[in-house]
Length: 116
Image 1 (cartoon, rainbow, N blue to C red):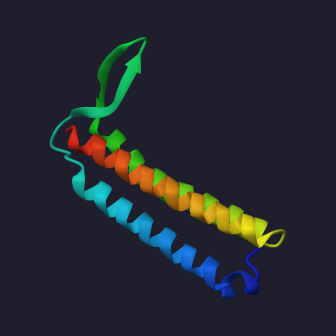
Image 2: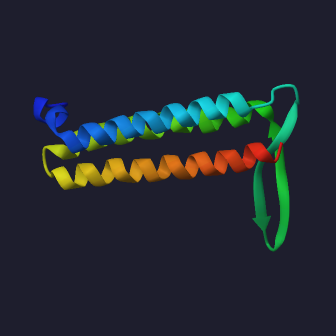
């Protein structure tokens, strides 16, 4: 699955390092900002039929941001490795999109943590 040529590609290796750095930043920021002293906290902002409101749930649900920050890159690295043998550019696009998703995950999780 992971060929030697895959890991010798400099751009792919750089993108892997960037993805791993983004994962570490997101997970550490998530774990440090969760306040477990409260039993209930705001977990998302909902707009349904013109009515806006905050959705409250258990504080443990905030760990889903850290879990997503680990699962999404793991799956995308696997997909990028599979696609690399067919087309290098598509593998690069998958890794770049992973970086964008991790950036948005970091921003959204930061906004939710600021609501606490």
